[in-house]
Length: 431
Image 1 (cartoon, rainbow, N blue to C red):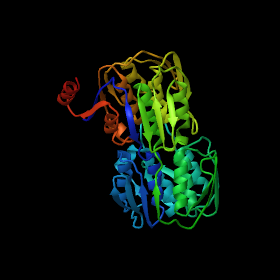
Image 2 (tube, helix red, strand yellow):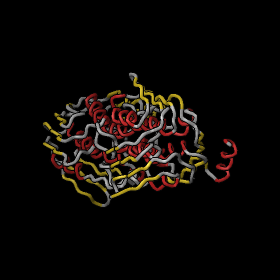
Image 3 (spheres, rainbow, N blue to C red):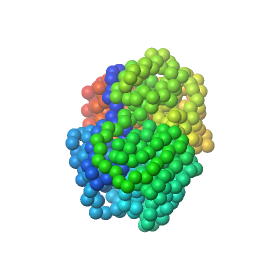
Image 4 (spheres, rainbow, N blue to C red):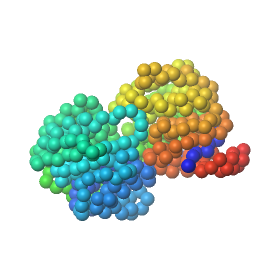
């Protein structure tokens, strides 16, 4: 089993290129199957979740060709099956986007109930409510979500809870429905806007993405396009907080600073220096970190996917901080691992962490519970005194391209090892 071997203590210094956004690429791939014409998608991240969704699409007849590592050709003109039961799709959340795409195009879709990281219950009720508002019948049977419509017609959808996935799924289905659809209380995240822009580049009529009301006028068909995915705000934020945690100086490149405003604001608040340029942000952590209060919220609030990263930073900050998780109810599972490294954190009520800052982390053997917490624990290990061995790194590889390589290029001492012998060899090498 592969593990990360890490020796901490080096500040991260240098530049890092940010990949395309995984959370935008997954629904964009699904939307690409809504036309029979060829679609080219650029700036896709080379991570395992991407492979899972592309393999699932290939298995039902979609032509998928890698132009290069970050660009793919998709042609869905010869789909022979509208049932997605690919084993890998059980493990990733993004597989459910094929429901909205196929329901819009074919008025029928069956997709295995999705999985993803174990960070709490993530209901699909708003997805189903939205499909039903467009005239579809939706049932869950034999582990599949099955949606079918004689006629898919525009309708009014009010989201009881802000949901990125449901907003995107309903938006895709509505793009090929008859008439007009309004989605109220819609999610505003950058990847929602990116999917809307992609649909519009294929001939859809979607307006209002990025606000809480999205209006869609259905069109008869969509056409091919050439599209570039936005940069990954969560990958960027992870390296920005890695700079804070390791007392480093890191410039994240190929980013949209507007998408990172809530992250930048917190870094400034806890004592970092932040310098913005047109497509890059530099974070310098030359002063001791100070405490803060954080509450995760839908965009443009502080992202739930950045909650573990800021917690790792605040556990080294002077004073007492409070982090409240308002999106998922089971997102502090990593805290036990951080405590192994010397953190002083108490989780109350499952959604609030009370953090008393400590002077340092120390290396330990730790286990990754989910994607974002995994990346955050690695940043803690990079700041820790001594050696850390990180298990279950497959979670991290779901969403971070070339993670060890990018960290090494910033001065980190990190390697992938597969045995105790390799770990001991690493320890001897780095001293």
